[in-house]
Amino acid sequence: MELRVLLKGLFLIASLVALGFLADSFKLGDMLTEHWVDAEIRGKGWTGSLLFLGMGALATGLGFPRQVIAFLGGYAFGFVAGTGLSLLATVLGCIAAFIYARWMGRGLIQHRFPGRIRKLDEFLRGHPFSMSLVIRLLPIGSNVVTNLLAGVSSVRGMPFFTGSALGYVPQNLVFALAGSGVNFDPSVRLTLATALFVISSLIGIWLYRRRHLGETLVDDSDQPAIKESVHEGKR
Image (cartoon, rainbow, N blue to C red):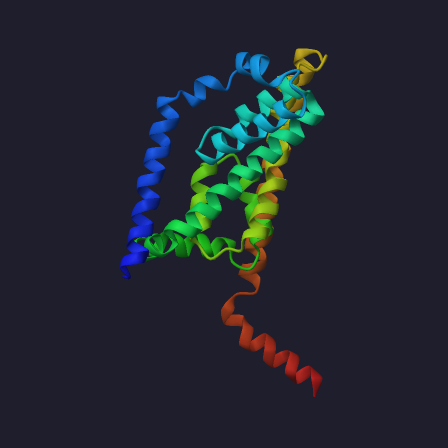
C-alpha cells in the first residue's frame, strides 16, 4: 500500500477520534437544547437560521441524532420551516461526512476491509438513489456510519445524497411536528407521527423487496440468454 494512502487513512481515523473527543469535551449534545434555541436562534433572523444550519450539519455529521435536530428545528422555526431547515442541515452533515471519508480514507478502508465495502457496493450498485432511500426509510443502522461507509465505497455521490434527502423527510416531519407545538390534540399528534413512521417503514420494505425481487428474476447468469433472445428476435 502506498505510504500516502496509509497516512491519509490513519489521519481519517485519528481526526474522527479527535472530533468525537472535542464534541464530548464541549458538551455539544448538552448545547443543542430548547434553552440554546431560545438564547441563540429565536428572534435572531437570518443569522439564527445560519447558526442553526451550521450547528445542525456539524452535529449530524459527527453522529448526533438527526431526530433531535428536527425537533429543535420545529421548536425554533415552526413545523414547515423547521422541517425544511433541519432537513437541509442533515443533508449537509451527510455530504460533509461522505466527502471527508472519500477524500481521506477510501484507499485504506478498501484495502483493510474489502469484504464490508463490497457488500455495501453490491447493495447500492446500479440503483444508488432507490437503495439509499431504502436505507434512510427503514429505522435501522446509524446515520453517520452509513455516510462514512458510503464515502469509502464506489457509490456515486449525487444519487446517494438525493436518495438520502428524500428518505430523511418522514422522520423529519414527525419530529419537527413534535417540536413545533402545533395546536393539535396530543393523541392526534401521536397518531399522526406513528402513522408517518409506519408508512415510511412500509415504503422502505416495499422498495427493498421490489428491487431485490427484480434482481432475483434477472440475475447476472441470465444476461447472456437475454441478450441472445433479443438478438434472435432481431433476425
